[in-house]
Length: 332
Image (cartoon, rainbow, N blue to C red; front, side, top):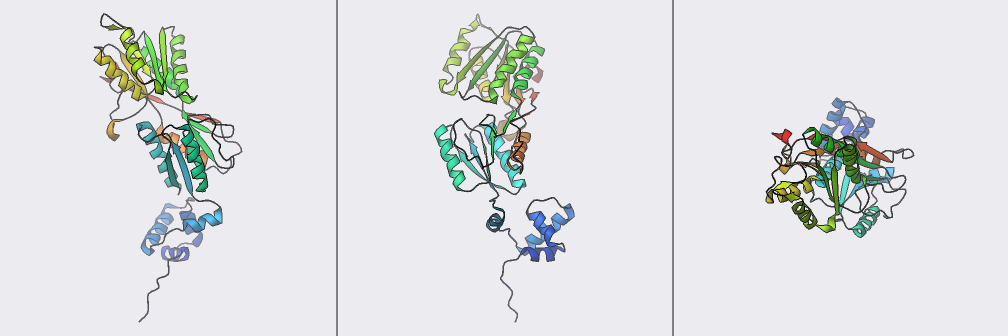
């Protein structure tokens, strides 16, 4: 009676089972393009034989771990969650695992997370940071989202200035003549600050009056409550069009206005920014400027894994688009 071998299958075994060259098997497992027929044959053979890629051994040979890190402020916010999900998906397609660390907006926690993932020998980091003074290994590939971090670190963002212009232009097109910009966010400078710049530039171009109110996150929503109440006279709100710097703020301001008897969009039209959808459906929380999440994720991953880091761009701004979502009159 012949005893069946218990030795783990090798790449040579997979090549023999698939009827292809060993080099073809290597290309498939290293995510190098091959013909679809060959790729399917190799994967089917590997599944049949129970072959598993030895990532540790591969890492010793290539000096890579095929692991990237995501340093993120939170996964509670729908936009951050959707962008993180898209980035992890793009990395998976390139054969990379992802270590996700959450900082809860704590700038000191960001440094601890950076140090932690550096000890785990990751091949690169994609981060959305609130600490401009982070100590990052200059030899470790790093891509920043929404913030200029330092020279040599590319930043990926949506075109926030154009988004602000688009929001103002749409409100004006829909008949608004007294415009307001509301902002709540971090005190750390970033690309998102350009939303206000674009909005105000569009208003000036049309010679329309506007006001802007921008508060730090720690101020909460009470100052907005006071501001809104002060600008209602005889049941009429002083503004007929509002651009909020996020969909979350748009949602909160709408609730407060309607609590004061001001109806959206009948009395005032509102546009947010991000493109957040309800419960993974197609329904938006508000009319909004939609960020290209999938394109941002793909661009960040491409930059991170680019072997030639000598000429990476300092900033890549990706196009945004407007979509009605119930808080403007074109939604009806």
